[in-house]
Amino acid sequence: MKRKTNAWLIVLAVSLAVLFFMSVISNALTIGEKLGETYPWMTWVYYGLIIFVIAFGIVYPIFGVFTRPIFALKDLHTADGKAKQKWCKRLVNNLLKNVELTPDERITVKGFLNEGDETDDRLILFFDSKIRPEINAEIKDTAKKVFLITAISQNSVYDMLGMASANFSLVKRIVEICGFRPTTPQLIKLYIKVLSYSLVSGGLEDMNIEEMVPMVAESTLGKLGGVFLASATQGAWNALASIRIAVITKNYLLNADVSQTKKELRKKSFKEAGELLKDIVSEGVEHKVAEPIKNFFKKSKNETVEE
Image (tube, rainbow, N blue to C red; front, side):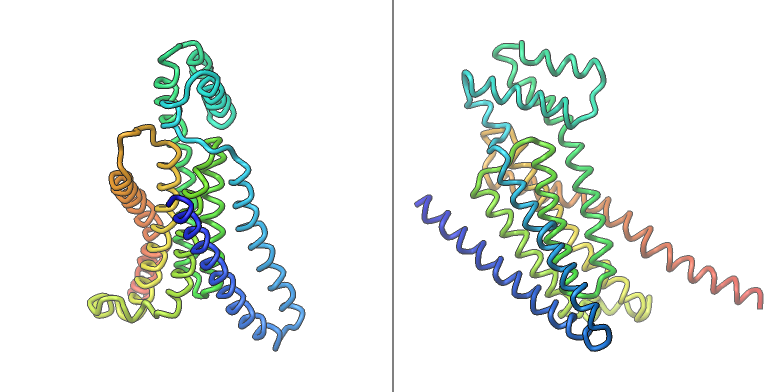
């Protein structure tokens, strides 16, 4: 039964990958033809950039993740003997390499290896407390970029490539920070989500979100307000998708509670993703949307007074 499930996951992942690349190629060819009508040489530059993004933004991150060893913090509870000792040393070395620690903390981390039966419990708590903030910083940074780029961009191929590249790279970065990766079935599920969200992101351009914005927004802010709100809505949706993928990845790796069910983990992921999104969207909208609008009206008001 397990093999059948994994086979279906692979088929689904391959199908979505083919659909994703067909969508990207179709949209890229359309833009390339338009560029070729005016600047023929720009067509090749454009196609070269598309290939570069796919190679280094999608293929390379996937390859980099699969070269890492499979592990999760909860595995320390079931490991014993040399296996537990090996992974405890790996976690210690990873902390010393990837996290800024004070001299006292570095001594404390090395001392965990001499704690005997308490080594795994104490190391898990310390590892989680130091690694989680590092990962959250990466998640927020990537989600902000996704929010702003997709809110500004009004082209489906840019949205799809941007979403895919950002999310594949984010998964790779989380794995690098932790020093290990989720299981292959878990990774396939994550990549299915990445491709699905990327395809939907590209499809949002054809949905004309401006028309889906509540009428009250247009009556209050006018058409311009509807455009801003539509862009912010699209950016927020894409940012939430990136956060969800990253939080799931993080929980796969850092969850040390073997008693938690999939439903509990999923609920925890949704809650954490929502909290992160609130901070990102409020900051992004305030600095990139609200402030320019306020400054515009303030400038217009001052000009009117001067006249």
